[in-house]
Each structure stands twice: as C-alpha cells, then as structure tokens.
Length: 565
Image (cartoon, rainbow, N blue to C red; front, side, top):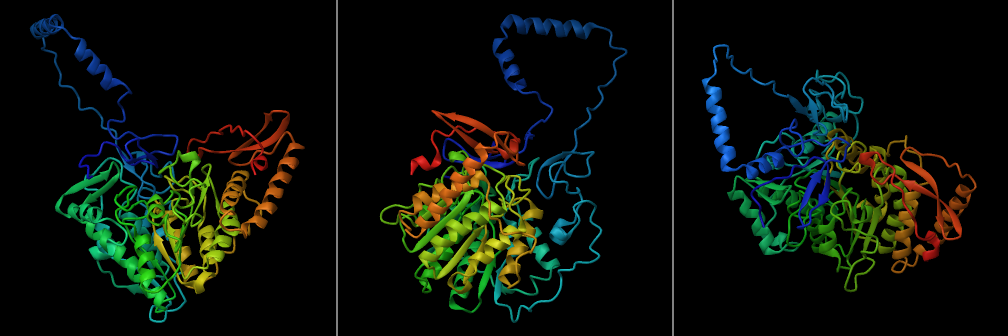
C-alpha cells in the first residue's frame, strides 16, 4: 500500500516499526529534529493541555485583560524585531546537519563546499573545491575496447529522489551515484577501462519471475503521482518506477553478458537498491529486487546454481524471502542483527531456509556495531568460502551495500576499502570469476565511492590494497558469531565440522588465557568483566553493542558457549 504522507525522517540507522514499516533513526549521540530545533520537548503538549483546561470564565478574563491593555498608553511602542533565524547546513558527504557558522561537518569532517561530487573521494575533505592538481591513479590499464569488466549505469536513475525538500536529506539520494561516478571518472576507471552496458527498462514479464503482478503494478502506478510512499521512508516520485526498471534491466543484462562469457565480470552502478524488496512489497528504500532478478536471468541463461553474497550492513530480507525455498540459489548474508533489534530485524543464524531448502540460507548476524575488516574476512575464511565451495556455484552475485564501511551514518561499522577489495578477491576464485557486483546501500559518499572504486579495480584484475594484513584473530564477538553460525550450518554442510572443532578449541583457549589476567585489556570498543555463572568464573569480553551511542553494554552469558554443543 502506498502512503502519501511522511511524518518520520531518515536521519540514521534504519529501525523496525510495529506496523511492518521502517524508519531511519540517528545512530550518533546527537539527534536532529525535523521541525523547530529550538522547541523544547513537550511544548506542544503543554499548549494542548492549556487549551483543553480553559473555561469560558478564562476566555472572558483573557478578553478583559486584552481590552485593559489596549487602553494603556502605547506612545512608546516599538515594533518587535525579527527573530534571528538559526541557519544550518547539511553535509553533502554524510547528510548530517551542522550549525551555519561551522565550515567542516562535525560528524565526518567534510568541508561544506568540498568537491566530492565533482571529483569523488579524490577531492580533499578539508578545503573548498578548487579542482584537482594531480591524481596518481588516473592512468594505465586496459581500454574499454579490450576490457573484460562491464559497468552498468544510466543517468536517468538520478531522477529518482524524494519530492518534498526537507531540512534533512534522505540518505538514499542521487548524490550516491554521482560521487561513485565522479570517483571512477577521476581515476580513469569508468569511462576508460571498463566496458559500458547499454541500459534498458526491464519488462513486466521479467519482473514477475520475482515479484507478484500486484507489486509490479504498485510500483508502476507511482509514475502517475508527483510523490508517494510505500513505507515511512521508502519514497517514490514520478521518475522512480522507470529508475527501478532501468536498475533491474541493467542487472539482468549484465548477468547475461557475464554468464555468456562476453565479459568476465561486472559492476551494476544502480539505484534504487533492491535487497529489501520482497515478493509482494517494497521497503527499506528498495522497489524491485535487482539481485533476485539477476539470479533468475542467469539461470534462464544456463546457470544451474547461483550464489548471492550480501555484505550490506542490513539483512536482505527480501532476497531471503524470494529464495528461502530454492536449493539452486545459495544466499549468504553478513549483517548487523543485535538480537533482531537492528533493521529489518530478520537474519538470525537459525534462519536457514524452508521446505527442503534448509542450509541454502546462511546468515552471519553480528551482535554489535563497529565490526571491521578482521571479522568480515574471518567469516569469509571460515563460513562463506567453505560453504560456497561445497555449493560449487556457476555464477556469483554480490549484493554490495557499502553501509558497513567506516564513517557510514546508518551502519556505524568499520570496514575499509581494503577490506571490500579483499572480500571481492576471495570470491573471484569461484566459478572462474563469473561475478556480478550490484550496488545496494551505503550513505557516506566518501566511503561508498572509495569502496566501490576499490572493488571495481579488483574486478579489473588489480591486486587488493597491500596495507591490509591477513587477520588471524577476530574480535571475541565476531568469533562467537562465527561459532554460532558453524554450529547451525554444519548440520547441512558436514565439511564445516572440522573447522568448528578447531575454532571451538581456540575459543576455549582464549577464555582460559583471559581468566588468568583478571585485570583484562580494554580494546578500542569493548570492555572486560568477570561474570559469575554458578560455580564457575568465566572471563567474558563485553563487545560494544551500540557503537553509535559509544556505550559499553554488559552481556550476561547463561552458560559457556561450548556447553551448548
């Protein structure tokens, strides 16, 4: 159902609503108001209460008082001066509001007139845009005529935007594509080294492989309206339906080109994103499920088994719903979950698929924010790649949200461009490198553009950045999540049992070592405490579960993790 009014703004991490919708809430310590930022909380309720409690005598008394005041001498009356308006500006990089007298964003440090939309992440964040003097990376490599990497992009997708101009921009905004495109152009990657793919609008028949006819019609009808809302923060304007068809069409054609061997791999620079869009609903900024369309088109072209790896910080509930009963599509998602308290609330480790397809849905649900390269790579080494190798896909799709990147205002995690490029390289060894990377989320322009550029360079054959060491030790919270996933998934993928036993031994060793050092060592985003559990004292690392509020949350573990197995 399309809702044509919006009362909630999108100022941070997406959260669930009780009615099944979704709304964005801030993930920093400071919350910004959509209305009068100077209004004290409760002012409106006080005014309403006063109005309800006034009697006729009160009203009469007020009129008398006014008449008395009118009779007073007003010869010295002076007009009231116009109140000073509070001026603020929203950061082009992270969208956060700043006082008008500030030059740099107090959240991300970006200059209020930076050139990120002209030069991408190559533009200095510290000064006003004055152009670029030199870009070392804008050189070399193959030309588009001989490239084996294709990029799908069309400027008409920039027309999809929130119709109503608000004090705070919607995080899923056209500037996301502009910043990535500017970065690729400045680096000489695209246009230049990548092959462009001609855009077409996907047909209704193709969309109905994934979505119901009613859903497709509901999206299409938005082209007859100036603006509309599917949920409180999933908007559409008159150009959104076409943008969604172009995005899905580019993903479908890229899948065909890659699987046929005409190109080796590709990157879909598209919006609106898609992995929250389910069989019959749009939500979470997503209208059509681009990854699901690409997967089914690849299968129609001859791919028997398709792997979808989703590293967006939010669980791809739509993609899981579409394929949870399908053994020919393996869906693996790594995302913040926090016991179901992080949007959209789905994606627990025990959600494994249904109706004979158990084990073909693999969720790696992080228990806290601040998750970085070492945990993601560790999960790739011990969960993603072992299961993917056993599945032996013919085609790989990456739902590449970059909102787990360092600096993202919604994800509040810590993955770097080097981390994304390493994960891309690790997946490149599957099925001869036939891989399609599809843009999903990511709302810090500097983070999303540098990460996307790093991924495309790996697709072009460049080695990942060398400044990322192979992480042997994940965080304690990350290790516990991986153990939880392995314990569940080894029932369906027996080859995981050996790795599980080894990691379980590693976990036990850590507990013993930490117990001997009761003072503990405080890490950047975690604290340590001794927890009494019956007759046992167990040294437990407390992970920073709410990174955005910079608080350490005490976790009480009922039993030792290895006592559950």
